[in-house]
Amino acid sequence: MKTDALLEAYRLYHDPLFLYALSLTHNPQDAEDLVSETFVRALMSFDGNGNLRAWLYKVLKNCFTDEYRKKKYLVHPDRLFLEQIEDNRFEVERLAEQYDERRRWLYAKIYQLKPIERDVILLSMTSGMNDKTIAGLLNITEENMRVIRFRTKEKLKKMAEKEGVR
Image: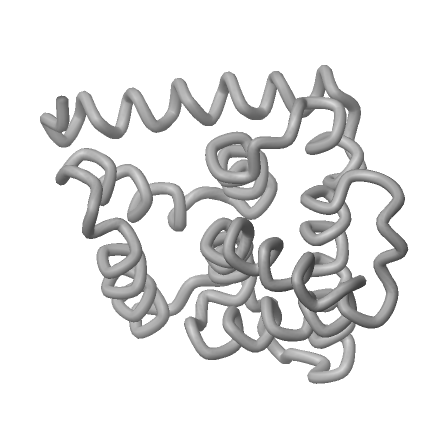
């Protein structure tokens, strides 16, 4: 991949990739490391064929899986601890400063979802990829992805109603 193309890809995809990485790691530093590793791999191996955006998300997920296997976590990183929840809220608020209070509330609630729900919602909201590409990335059927997205949206709506968020 040429340097100019990599810089443009970085400009376009860094923030959405970072949010996705943060949803996987629950740690801003680890998320930034994952995004960096993703772009290093892009520089070294993307040949220009195919959907760059989808490829970057797939590489990021593979990097996360590789790191998870290397570290052999005693506790799965998708399990949220109180400290991690607080760290993520601050990071999400920092990234979402340009959005209104409802958007910040929504991002905070997304990080409390099950990992597959969080992946489907975040990829649908931030990646700009179509349903088929997202489903392929998550190794689920398109129909399953749509059902998960619908049910998760309903869950978030109920949370908003319960908490009085409009």
